[in-house]
Length: 137
Image (cartoon, rainbow, N blue to C red):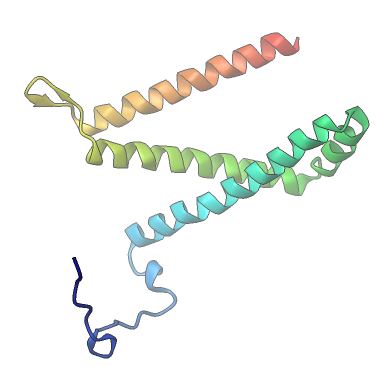
């Protein structure tokens, strides 16, 4: 099946300013969500390097961990954590819209769906924290 392609010279391309995403709060929040992916990707690359340093021995890992102890890295990790929370919550909101949960003929309210997902996220996070603290001590 071959489709006829339109002549590119006749297509309309609207010129947008570089700050188009600042015109509406919803656009700004969307761009913030996209920016969160960059922080999370950097965090994951550093985490993979950290795992690699573990395979090189305790001295190599201690030297690498020392490089991650300045306040800048701690602030970066805090910002990344907040971005990960924001990313997760916006994902729950979008999944409630895209994949509504039906119980019989009735559709579950979106806010309840989001609240249940956030609750499960919190419970799983607390279980992991308790296990970490129990195994550490």
